[in-house]
Amino acid sequence: MRKVYMDHSATTPAHPDVAKIMNEFMVDSFGNASSVHSFGREARNALDKARQQVADLIGAEAKEIVFTSGGTEADNHAIKGVAKTYSDKGKHIITTKFEHHAVLHTCEYLEKEHDFKVTYLPVSKDGYVQVSDLEEAIRNDTILITVMYANNEIGTIQPIKEMAKLAKKEGIIFHTDAVQGVGVVPIDVKDLEVDLLTLSGHKFYGPKGVGALFVKKGMKIDPMFHGGSHEMKIRAGTENVPGIAGIGKAAEIALHQMKERSDKIVKLRDKLAEGIIAKIDHVQINGGMDNRLPGNLNVSIAYVEGEALLLNLDQKGIAVSSGSACTSGSLDPSHVLLAIDLPHELAHGSLRLTLGAGNSEQDVDYVLNELPEIVVRLRSMSPLYEETKKSEKEGCAHV
Image (cartoon, rainbow, N blue to C red; front, side, top):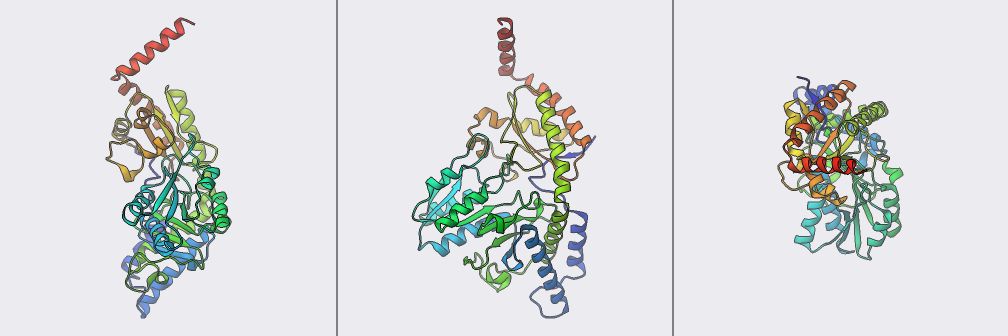
C-alpha cells in the first residue's frame, strides 16, 4: 500500500540536514549557552548563528528574533505582552473570527480575566479580511491589531501590508501570526511594517517545540516568564540549543529552496484540485485560489462526513486532515469554515489536503484514484444523497 502524506499544515518532516545538526548539539556540543567555558561558547555561537538565519528568512535583524517553544507561546507572548505593557493607553484589541485558537483563546482570556474588549472582524466568503472593516473597527482605545498572515485551514493570504500601514498611521501595534507563511512564501517584516510576527519551525521542515517571535527594534514588550536574562531579557529559560540550531538550519534551507518548492507544489495542488472537481460531484473548494498558500487545498464534499473520509483515506495510507490539528477530536464544525458562512453540513464534510516538498505526481494520482471511490461508498449509505440524485434526474427529465 502506498503511503501519502498530505497534512503539511499540521507539521512537516524535519529536513535531514536539520536532524543532523540537532543531533550534533544533543550529543557532542551539548553545553549551556549561558556557560562561559568552551562548551557554553559553542552553544552560544550556535544560538547566534540560528538567530541570524531566522532573521535572514524574514528580513529582520538578529536582535529582533526571540526564540520560543513554538507558535502558541509566541502568539500568547505577543498578545499578552502588549496587553500588559500598554493597558494604560487602552484595553481594546482587534482580531478576526478565523484566527488560530492560540490567538482567539488568548483574546478571550483577556476579555474574561482582564476586562479587555475585543472586536472580531468578519471574513468574506472567499476567506479574506477587508481593510475597510478593520478601519471601521479602530477606536481611540485600540492598542493592538492581530491578524494572521495566512489561514491555517483554507490557506488564504491576508492583506497584512495594508493593515499594518493603517495600524502604523493610527499609532496601534500590529501583530501577525505568520506560522503558516514563514518558510513557505516570501515574507519581509520591513516591507510589511509589522511590529510583531510569530513563526514556528515545524511548519517549514524544522523541529517541533521551537519557534520565534519577531519583536521590532525599539519596541517594548513585557516578558511572560521570569527568571534569567535569556533572549535579551524577553524570554527567560535555558535555551533549547538543539531545537534552535535546527530551526536556524531549516530557515537557511527554506530561504534558498522556497521558490523551487513552491513552483512544484502549486502544480501538484492545482492538479489535485482539478481532479477532485472532475471526478466528484457536489464538491467545492473553500477559500479563494488567487492569493493562497501554495500547498493548501480545502474542499467540502456534500453528503459525507469529513471524519469518515479521513478515516477511510487513512486506511488507504493517505494522511489528510478535516481541519486544524489543534482541534482534532472536536465534534464541532471548523470555526474557520463557519466564519466564511459555510453551512454546517458542508463544514462537517470538509477535508484539508496540504502538500509539501516530498509529494509527487504519483501521490496526487493515488489520491485521485482512491478518494472518489471512498466518496461513492460513503454516499451509498446516505438517504439524502439518493434523494438529491433522484431530484436531479427528475429535473433533467422535465427539461
